[in-house]
Amino acid sequence: MPAADFQCLIVEKDAAGNVHRSITRRPLSDLPPGDVLIRVRYSSLNYKDGLAAEAHPGVVRKLPHVPGIDAAGVVEESSSPLWKPGDEVIVTSYDLGAAHWGGWADYIRVPAGWVVPRPSGLTLRESMILGTAGFTAAQCVQAIQTNGVSPEAGEIVVTGATGGVGCLAVMILKQLGYSVVAVTGKPELEPRLKAWGASRVIGRNDVIDSSPKPLLSAKWAGAVDTVGGNTLATILRSTKEYGVVSACGLVGGTDLPLTVHPFILRGVILAGISSQNFPAGRRNDIWQKLAGEWKPRHLEDVATEIGLEQAEEYVQKILKGEVGGRTIIRL
Ligand SMILES: NC(=O)c1ccc[n+]([C@@H]2O[C@H](COP(=O)([O-])OP(=O)(O)OC[C@H]3O[C@@H](n4cnc5c(N)ncnc54)[C@H](OP(=O)(O)O)[C@@H]3O)[C@@H](O)[C@H]2O)c1
Image 1 (cartoon, rainbow, N blue to C red):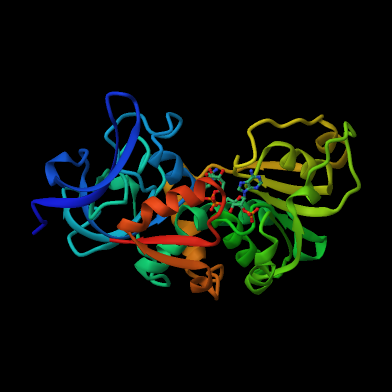
Image 2 (cartoon, rainbow, N blue to C red):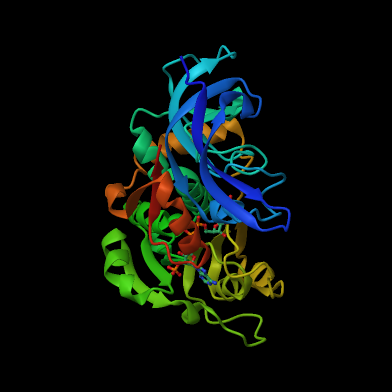
């Protein structure tokens, strides 16, 4: 029997337009409509959650809002035959934590089609260490693999390497036998990046070239880019023939100053990665991989667990690019 009300972190604006966040209790009837009521055990902190916590209009459609694009927990009520009370489940992507109240709460209510069964190789806690970041990292790696880049082809460069997507991409790639070059703005974390699987660590400026040259010397067999902007453009210009660059992020910018030369002279593939509406069947395949042979052996090494009351501090940190690894939120 669910409680009558629930705790959540709520984002609101006052009459002057200032954004406020507070931990509060709300009646269950305040939750958005949906088929499945889930008692959340863990959520996580992603860059997009930082934006949602700031009521960024690109993420949040209306206020008040509960952030949290990831949630893992136990079904308490279901009007769908797909799910029954007691099922352990994961919800990531779709509109969770964006247009729909998210996982920084004791409860979420969501459409049945958003729910994924907890794969047997993952605990609920581990599924949130992965979360949208791990799911996205796996999509990036899959694009590199399925487009024909083998570990023998050369180095794979990963940008934003200490961040959520970045650190999990480093781990998965290493586990699959790739040689990984980690790009970071936190040189003091070089030992951790090497422990996670990077063979070399370089600085952010090493992957930024502002010259107008359409092509640069070819270094990379592939890339996982979370930064965008000139970093992505430089990497594309520096990728070897038939290399694959998976682009998923924009922490460094949304422009792409580039010519077509990497594509038509080197056959470089730019693989766009979007986890939000990734089709359900293929979504389960990715979770099965993450619970099986792709599951990072040292997953706990990247995890920091916090309570909802520490979310405020971590929101500030992630927006400044200061969070290393994955932060999970215990509910
Ligand atoms: N397409 C999708 O479906 C999808 C899914 C998930 C995430 N994303 C996007 O992927 C990106 C990373 O997400 P995340 O949750 O992993 O974020 P995160 O944990 O905050 O990691 C981002 C990392 O990028 C680096 N960074 C921060 N600001 C930077 C800047 N100005 N220039 C260069 N590097 C910078 C930092 O790592 P270092 O200090 O190590 O450089 C930071 O830790 C975000 O843009 C997010 O929106 C997209």
